Image (cartoon, rainbow, N blue to C red; front, side, top):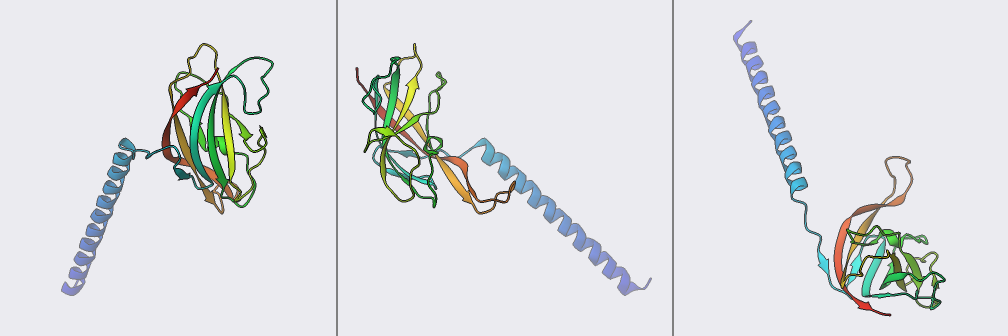
Amino acid sequence: MTEPSRTTIRQRLFAFLIAGLGGLAASAFSFSLAVYEAAHPPRTPKAVPGEQIDTGRWLVTLRSARSGTTPPTGIPPWKPTRLVMVDMDVVNQSATPSNLLSRAVTLDVPQAALQPPTDYLDRDKGLAGHFNPGMPERVTLAWEWPEGNPVPQRLNLTINGQIYKLRDNLYGASDWFDADAVATVELPVEQAP
């Protein structure tokens, strides 16, 4: 081999070695950053009652919480049950009607297994069907409270975000998907008979 070709081979090997070490360092940094973020997740911001919260699909404004035995319809149930109700204003920001509000607002109660809430429209005191896009509604979510569990003095609610994907990875269709929590709200509970 001649001297110039030996130098170019050495230079190429040195360049490959540097590129490989740079890629290895970038991979190690990326992995350590992912581990750190998983170990130290960001805190969910706290919102105050009356503050409008944007979840992506919904605009939610939590107003108040109360406990009672009569649902928002005003008709007592045949089997008396304790209800925990949260009053709120909502606006559906998507392009289609939706009735999935209960996925956006969840009640944080570790000791009680609760069924999903029932949505009531305050304007006509009936069960809510679909919420039309862009139309503000005042809504009451009502959870049936388990017997034997005392109703707390304060409710912690988590407002979950939703993201829109034009094409999802599984079916290739557009839809709204659950995301991380966007806010937490603490509401005092009014005790009604």
